Amino acid sequence: MDEPIGAAEQYPAKYWHQLDDGRIQCDLCPRDCKLHEGQRGACFVRGRVGNAMVLTTYGRSSGFCVDPIEKKPLNQFYPGSSILSFGTAGCNLACKFCQNWDISKSRSFDKLADQASPEDIARYAESCGCKSVAFTYNDPVIFAEYAMDVADACHDRNIKAVAVTAGYIHALPRRDFFAKMDAANVDLKAFTEEFYVKQTGAHLQPVLETLQYLKHETNVWLELTTLLIPGLNDSVQEVSAMSNWIVKELGTDVPLHFSAFHPDYKMKDRSFTPAETLIQARKIALDAGLQYVYTGNVHYLEGDTTYCPACGSVLIVRNWYEIKQYRLTQDGHCEQCNAAIAGRFEQFSGQFGRQRIPVKIGASA
Image 1 (spheres, one colour):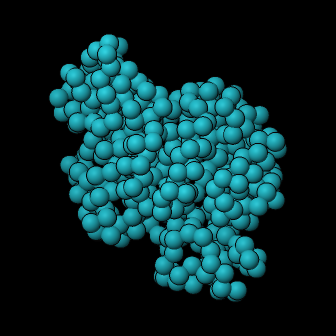
Image 2 (cartoon, rainbow, N blue to C red):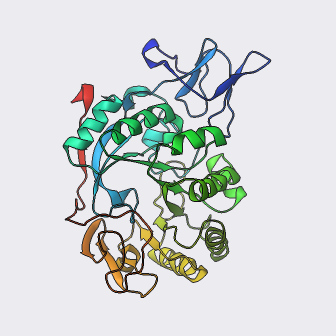
Image 3 (cartoon, rainbow, N blue to C red):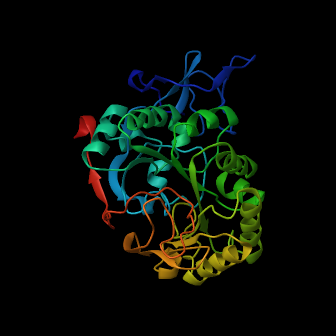
Protein backbone atom coordinates (compact mmCIF):
# COMPACT_ATOMS: atom_id res chain seq x y z
CA MET A 1 0.00 0.00 0.00
CA ASP A 2 1.43 3.38 -1.00
CA GLU A 3 1.87 5.98 1.71
CA PRO A 4 -0.97 8.54 1.36
CA ILE A 5 0.05 11.79 -0.32
CA GLY A 6 -0.67 14.69 2.03
CA ALA A 7 -1.80 18.14 0.95
CA ALA A 8 1.58 19.69 1.86
CA GLU A 9 3.35 17.27 -0.49
CA GLN A 10 1.43 18.15 -3.63
CA TYR A 11 3.71 20.28 -5.80
CA PRO A 12 2.55 20.25 -9.46
CA ALA A 13 4.83 18.00 -11.50
CA LYS A 14 5.71 18.15 -15.18
CA TYR A 15 6.22 15.30 -17.65
CA TRP A 16 3.10 13.15 -17.61
CA HIS A 17 0.04 12.45 -19.75
CA GLN A 18 -3.40 10.87 -19.43
CA LEU A 19 -3.96 7.37 -20.80
CA ASP A 20 -7.13 6.15 -22.48
CA ASP A 21 -7.79 3.66 -19.66
CA GLY A 22 -7.96 6.43 -17.05
CA ARG A 23 -4.46 6.03 -15.65
CA ILE A 24 -1.81 8.72 -15.98
CA GLN A 25 1.71 7.94 -17.16
CA CYS A 26 4.84 9.58 -15.84
CA ASP A 27 7.06 10.63 -18.75
CA LEU A 28 10.10 11.64 -16.73
CA CYS A 29 12.17 8.47 -17.02
CA PRO A 30 12.12 5.22 -19.01
CA ARG A 31 10.20 3.43 -16.28
CA ASP A 32 7.00 5.02 -17.67
CA CYS A 33 5.06 4.40 -14.45
CA LYS A 34 1.28 4.19 -15.02
CA LEU A 35 -0.72 5.26 -12.01
CA HIS A 36 -4.21 5.05 -10.60
CA GLU A 37 -5.50 7.60 -8.09
CA GLY A 38 -3.27 7.85 -5.01
CA GLN A 39 -0.49 5.66 -6.40
CA ARG A 40 3.19 6.58 -6.41
CA GLY A 41 5.76 5.81 -9.08
CA ALA A 42 8.69 3.47 -8.58
CA CYS A 43 10.74 6.46 -7.40
CA PHE A 44 8.20 6.94 -4.56
CA VAL A 45 8.31 10.75 -4.74
CA ARG A 46 6.14 11.29 -7.82
CA GLY A 47 2.51 10.32 -7.52
CA ARG A 48 -1.02 10.85 -8.73
CA VAL A 49 -3.53 13.11 -6.99
CA GLY A 50 -6.77 13.54 -8.87
CA ASN A 51 -6.00 13.78 -12.55
CA ALA A 52 -2.50 15.18 -12.18
CA MET A 53 1.03 14.20 -11.22
CA VAL A 54 2.61 15.75 -8.13
CA LEU A 55 6.14 15.90 -6.72
CA THR A 56 6.04 15.15 -3.01
CA THR A 57 9.55 16.31 -2.03
CA TYR A 58 9.66 19.86 -3.39
CA GLY A 59 11.48 22.06 -0.87
CA ARG A 60 12.34 19.13 1.42
CA SER A 61 15.77 17.61 1.92
CA SER A 62 17.42 14.70 3.69
CA GLY A 63 20.21 17.07 4.75
CA PHE A 64 22.79 19.61 3.59
CA CYS A 65 26.58 19.43 3.71
CA VAL A 66 29.41 21.61 2.49
CA ASP A 67 31.89 19.33 0.71
CA PRO A 68 34.98 19.55 -1.47
CA ILE A 69 34.05 19.43 -5.16
CA GLU A 70 36.32 16.40 -5.55
CA LYS A 71 33.93 14.37 -3.38
CA LYS A 72 31.19 14.38 -6.06
CA PRO A 73 33.56 13.29 -7.71
CA LEU A 74 34.49 16.14 -10.05
CA ASN A 75 38.24 16.55 -10.42
CA GLN A 76 38.30 19.02 -13.30
CA PHE A 77 35.49 21.39 -12.37
CA TYR A 78 36.94 24.27 -10.33
CA PRO A 79 39.35 22.06 -8.34
CA GLY A 80 39.68 22.86 -4.66
CA SER A 81 36.36 24.70 -4.45
CA SER A 82 33.57 23.96 -2.00
CA ILE A 83 30.10 22.76 -2.93
CA LEU A 84 26.84 22.75 -1.01
CA SER A 85 25.39 19.23 -1.35
CA PHE A 86 21.89 17.93 -0.72
CA GLY A 87 19.37 15.29 -1.75
CA THR A 88 15.79 14.32 -1.02
CA ALA A 89 14.40 10.75 -0.86
CA GLY A 90 13.65 7.99 -3.32
CA CYS A 91 15.24 6.86 -6.60
CA ASN A 92 14.14 5.68 -10.03
CA LEU A 93 16.69 2.87 -10.06
CA ALA A 94 16.65 -0.18 -7.79
CA CYS A 95 20.37 -0.84 -7.35
CA LYS A 96 21.02 -3.80 -5.07
CA PHE A 97 24.41 -2.31 -4.20
CA CYS A 98 23.23 1.22 -3.35
CA GLN A 99 25.74 3.01 -1.13
CA ASN A 100 23.18 5.63 -0.03
CA TRP A 101 20.27 3.21 0.39
CA ASP A 102 18.96 4.77 3.61
CA ILE A 103 18.13 7.90 1.59
CA SER A 104 17.51 6.66 -1.93
CA LYS A 105 15.42 3.65 -0.84
CA SER A 106 13.50 5.54 1.83
CA ARG A 107 9.76 4.87 1.81
CA SER A 108 9.07 7.32 4.60
CA PHE A 109 9.47 11.05 4.70
CA ASP A 110 10.89 11.04 8.21
CA LYS A 111 14.24 11.31 6.40
CA LEU A 112 13.25 14.74 5.07
CA ALA A 113 14.01 16.77 8.16
CA ASP A 114 15.35 19.86 6.38
CA GLN A 115 13.15 22.28 4.46
CA ALA A 116 14.49 25.03 2.25
CA SER A 117 13.29 27.05 -0.71
CA PRO A 118 15.45 27.44 -3.81
CA GLU A 119 16.25 30.99 -2.69
CA ASP A 120 17.24 29.78 0.80
CA ILE A 121 19.70 27.32 -0.71
CA ALA A 122 21.25 29.80 -3.13
CA ARG A 123 21.54 32.44 -0.42
CA TYR A 124 23.24 30.04 1.95
CA ALA A 125 25.66 28.78 -0.70
CA GLU A 126 26.65 32.36 -1.44
CA SER A 127 27.04 33.25 2.23
CA CYS A 128 29.47 30.40 2.89
CA GLY A 129 31.51 30.92 -0.27
CA CYS A 130 30.47 27.80 -2.16
CA LYS A 131 31.27 27.85 -5.86
CA SER A 132 28.50 25.34 -6.62
CA VAL A 133 25.44 23.51 -5.35
CA ALA A 134 25.18 19.73 -5.91
CA PHE A 135 22.05 17.63 -6.25
CA THR A 136 23.29 14.31 -4.93
CA TYR A 137 22.83 11.45 -2.39
CA ASN A 138 19.78 10.33 -4.35
CA ASP A 139 19.12 10.95 -8.04
CA PRO A 140 18.04 14.55 -8.80
CA VAL A 141 16.19 13.42 -11.92
CA ILE A 142 13.26 12.39 -9.73
CA PHE A 143 13.02 15.83 -8.10
CA ALA A 144 13.73 17.66 -11.35
CA GLU A 145 11.32 20.56 -10.76
CA TYR A 146 12.93 21.38 -7.41
CA ALA A 147 16.48 20.95 -8.73
CA MET A 148 15.81 23.17 -11.74
CA ASP A 149 14.35 25.93 -9.56
CA VAL A 150 17.34 25.71 -7.22
CA ALA A 151 19.67 25.94 -10.22
CA ASP A 152 17.89 29.10 -11.41
CA ALA A 153 18.19 30.69 -7.97
CA CYS A 154 21.88 29.76 -7.84
CA HIS A 155 22.58 31.20 -11.27
CA ASP A 156 21.05 34.50 -10.12
CA ARG A 157 23.91 34.61 -7.60
CA ASN A 158 26.62 33.32 -9.96
CA ILE A 159 26.69 29.91 -8.29
CA LYS A 160 27.06 26.78 -10.42
CA ALA A 161 24.64 23.83 -10.42
CA VAL A 162 25.91 20.23 -10.39
CA ALA A 163 23.93 17.02 -10.94
CA VAL A 164 25.19 13.70 -9.61
CA THR A 165 22.96 11.29 -11.46
CA ALA A 166 22.53 7.89 -13.09
CA GLY A 167 21.32 9.65 -16.24
CA TYR A 168 18.12 7.58 -16.47
CA ILE A 169 15.79 10.13 -18.03
CA HIS A 170 13.66 10.63 -21.15
CA ALA A 171 14.68 13.02 -23.96
CA LEU A 172 12.33 15.96 -23.26
CA PRO A 173 12.95 16.26 -19.50
CA ARG A 174 16.63 15.55 -20.16
CA ARG A 175 16.80 18.65 -22.34
CA ASP A 176 15.03 20.81 -19.73
CA PHE A 177 16.94 19.42 -16.77
CA PHE A 178 20.47 19.65 -18.13
CA ALA A 179 19.83 23.09 -19.60
CA LYS A 180 19.98 24.23 -15.96
CA MET A 181 23.16 22.32 -15.04
CA ASP A 182 26.76 23.46 -15.31
CA ALA A 183 28.33 20.08 -14.57
CA ALA A 184 27.30 16.47 -14.14
CA ASN A 185 28.88 13.34 -12.81
CA VAL A 186 26.99 10.47 -14.39
CA ASP A 187 27.13 7.08 -12.74
CA LEU A 188 27.69 4.55 -15.52
CA LYS A 189 26.81 1.48 -13.47
CA ALA A 190 28.28 -1.09 -15.85
CA PHE A 191 28.54 -1.78 -19.55
CA THR A 192 26.14 -4.70 -20.03
CA GLU A 193 22.38 -4.78 -20.34
CA GLU A 194 22.33 -7.87 -18.12
CA PHE A 195 23.89 -5.96 -15.22
CA TYR A 196 21.48 -3.05 -15.59
CA VAL A 197 18.41 -5.30 -15.68
CA LYS A 198 19.43 -7.68 -12.88
CA GLN A 199 21.23 -5.31 -10.54
CA THR A 200 19.48 -1.95 -11.07
CA GLY A 201 16.08 -2.75 -12.57
CA ALA A 202 16.85 -0.40 -15.45
CA HIS A 203 18.39 -0.47 -18.93
CA LEU A 204 21.78 0.57 -20.30
CA GLN A 205 20.83 2.26 -23.58
CA PRO A 206 18.98 5.29 -22.11
CA VAL A 207 22.06 6.06 -20.00
CA LEU A 208 24.36 5.89 -23.02
CA GLU A 209 21.99 8.24 -24.86
CA THR A 210 22.16 10.69 -21.96
CA LEU A 211 25.96 10.61 -22.08
CA GLN A 212 26.02 11.25 -25.82
CA TYR A 213 23.52 14.07 -25.43
CA LEU A 214 25.52 15.73 -22.65
CA LYS A 215 28.81 15.53 -24.54
CA HIS A 216 27.64 16.55 -27.99
CA GLU A 217 24.58 18.75 -27.48
CA THR A 218 25.25 20.72 -24.28
CA ASN A 219 27.96 22.76 -22.58
CA VAL A 220 27.62 20.77 -19.36
CA TRP A 221 30.98 19.68 -17.97
CA LEU A 222 30.84 15.87 -17.81
CA GLU A 223 32.68 13.32 -15.70
CA LEU A 224 31.81 9.62 -15.31
CA THR A 225 31.96 7.23 -12.37
CA THR A 226 31.81 3.44 -12.38
CA LEU A 227 31.61 1.51 -9.12
CA LEU A 228 33.52 -1.72 -9.75
CA ILE A 229 31.87 -4.69 -8.03
CA PRO A 230 33.93 -7.90 -7.80
CA GLY A 231 32.64 -10.55 -10.17
CA LEU A 232 29.84 -8.43 -11.63
CA ASN A 233 31.23 -5.57 -13.72
CA ASP A 234 35.00 -5.59 -13.16
CA SER A 235 36.22 -7.96 -15.88
CA VAL A 236 38.99 -6.88 -18.22
CA GLN A 237 36.63 -7.40 -21.16
CA GLU A 238 33.88 -5.18 -19.77
CA VAL A 239 36.19 -2.39 -18.62
CA SER A 240 37.89 -2.47 -22.01
CA ALA A 241 34.59 -2.38 -23.91
CA MET A 242 33.35 0.53 -21.81
CA SER A 243 36.60 2.48 -22.20
CA ASN A 244 36.61 1.98 -25.96
CA TRP A 245 33.00 3.13 -26.20
CA ILE A 246 33.77 6.29 -24.22
CA VAL A 247 36.74 7.08 -26.47
CA LYS A 248 34.71 6.51 -29.64
CA GLU A 249 31.39 8.08 -28.62
CA LEU A 250 32.37 10.77 -26.10
CA GLY A 251 36.04 11.49 -26.75
CA THR A 252 39.32 11.06 -24.95
CA ASP A 253 38.95 14.08 -22.67
CA VAL A 254 36.01 12.92 -20.49
CA PRO A 255 37.33 12.10 -17.00
CA LEU A 256 36.47 8.62 -15.77
CA HIS A 257 36.48 7.60 -12.11
CA PHE A 258 36.70 3.95 -11.06
CA SER A 259 35.37 3.64 -7.52
CA ALA A 260 35.69 0.85 -4.96
CA PHE A 261 32.59 -1.05 -3.83
CA HIS A 262 31.87 -1.86 -0.21
CA PRO A 263 29.22 -4.44 0.83
CA ASP A 264 25.90 -2.69 1.51
CA TYR A 265 22.12 -2.84 1.19
CA LYS A 266 21.15 -6.07 -0.67
CA MET A 267 24.69 -6.93 -1.72
CA LYS A 268 26.50 -7.79 1.47
CA ASP A 269 27.72 -11.11 0.09
CA ARG A 270 30.30 -9.45 -2.16
CA SER A 271 33.78 -8.54 -0.99
CA PHE A 272 35.34 -5.08 -1.05
CA THR A 273 36.91 -4.12 -4.35
CA PRO A 274 40.68 -4.70 -4.17
CA ALA A 275 42.82 -1.67 -4.94
CA GLU A 276 44.55 -3.76 -7.61
CA THR A 277 41.26 -4.04 -9.53
CA LEU A 278 40.93 -0.25 -9.70
CA ILE A 279 44.55 0.18 -10.68
CA GLN A 280 44.18 -2.39 -13.45
CA ALA A 281 40.94 -0.75 -14.70
CA ARG A 282 42.67 2.63 -14.77
CA LYS A 283 45.49 1.20 -16.88
CA ILE A 284 43.02 -0.39 -19.30
CA ALA A 285 41.19 2.92 -19.74
CA LEU A 286 44.43 4.86 -20.24
CA ASP A 287 45.63 2.30 -22.78
CA ALA A 288 42.31 2.71 -24.62
CA GLY A 289 43.12 6.39 -25.05
CA LEU A 290 41.33 8.15 -22.20
CA GLN A 291 43.42 11.04 -20.92
CA TYR A 292 42.05 11.50 -17.40
CA VAL A 293 41.33 8.37 -15.36
CA TYR A 294 40.99 8.35 -11.59
CA THR A 295 40.49 5.86 -8.75
CA GLY A 296 38.16 6.45 -5.81
CA ASN A 297 37.53 5.08 -2.31
CA VAL A 298 41.11 3.81 -2.14
CA HIS A 299 44.31 5.60 -1.19
CA TYR A 300 46.28 5.56 -4.44
CA LEU A 301 48.13 8.81 -5.08
CA GLU A 302 48.66 8.20 -8.80
CA GLY A 303 44.96 7.54 -9.27
CA ASP A 304 44.09 10.83 -7.57
CA THR A 305 46.52 12.87 -9.68
CA THR A 306 45.74 14.88 -12.81
CA TYR A 307 48.45 14.64 -15.50
CA CYS A 308 48.99 16.70 -18.63
CA PRO A 309 48.07 14.47 -21.59
CA ALA A 310 50.51 16.39 -23.82
CA CYS A 311 53.77 16.37 -21.85
CA GLY A 312 52.98 14.07 -18.93
CA SER A 313 53.65 16.70 -16.27
CA VAL A 314 51.98 16.41 -12.89
CA LEU A 315 49.27 19.10 -12.75
CA ILE A 316 47.18 18.44 -9.63
CA VAL A 317 48.34 16.17 -6.82
CA ARG A 318 45.58 15.08 -4.43
CA ASN A 319 45.71 13.19 -1.16
CA TRP A 320 42.14 11.95 -0.92
CA TYR A 321 40.23 15.22 -1.41
CA GLU A 322 43.06 17.50 -0.38
CA ILE A 323 45.11 19.25 -3.08
CA LYS A 324 48.84 19.09 -2.37
CA GLN A 325 50.12 20.59 -5.63
CA TYR A 326 48.49 22.71 -8.35
CA ARG A 327 50.26 23.56 -11.61
CA LEU A 328 47.61 24.94 -13.94
CA THR A 329 47.32 28.46 -15.28
CA GLN A 330 44.25 30.54 -14.48
CA ASP A 331 42.63 29.59 -17.79
CA GLY A 332 43.38 25.86 -17.45
CA HIS A 333 46.66 25.31 -19.29
CA CYS A 334 49.64 23.19 -18.29
CA GLU A 335 52.31 25.40 -16.75
CA GLN A 336 55.02 23.26 -18.34
CA CYS A 337 53.95 23.03 -22.01
CA ASN A 338 50.87 25.33 -22.14
CA ALA A 339 48.58 22.55 -23.43
CA ALA A 340 44.90 23.18 -22.76
CA ILE A 341 43.45 20.87 -20.10
CA ALA A 342 39.82 19.80 -20.38
CA GLY A 343 37.63 21.17 -17.62
CA ARG A 344 36.47 24.35 -15.94
CA PHE A 345 39.16 26.34 -14.16
CA GLU A 346 39.85 29.73 -12.60
CA GLN A 347 42.60 31.32 -10.54
CA PHE A 348 43.57 28.83 -7.84
CA SER A 349 43.73 30.68 -4.54
CA GLY A 350 43.58 27.90 -2.00
CA GLN A 351 41.29 24.99 -1.34
CA PHE A 352 38.41 23.89 0.81
CA GLY A 353 40.23 20.70 1.83
CA ARG A 354 38.97 17.32 3.02
CA GLN A 355 36.41 18.52 5.55
CA ARG A 356 32.71 17.69 5.38
CA ILE A 357 30.48 20.16 7.20
CA PRO A 358 26.79 19.31 7.85
CA VAL A 359 24.69 22.47 7.88
CA LYS A 360 21.09 23.55 8.48
CA ILE A 361 19.23 25.76 6.02
CA GLY A 362 15.80 27.33 5.85
CA ALA A 363 13.07 26.23 8.25
CA SER A 364 15.28 23.78 10.13
CA ALA A 365 18.15 26.22 10.75
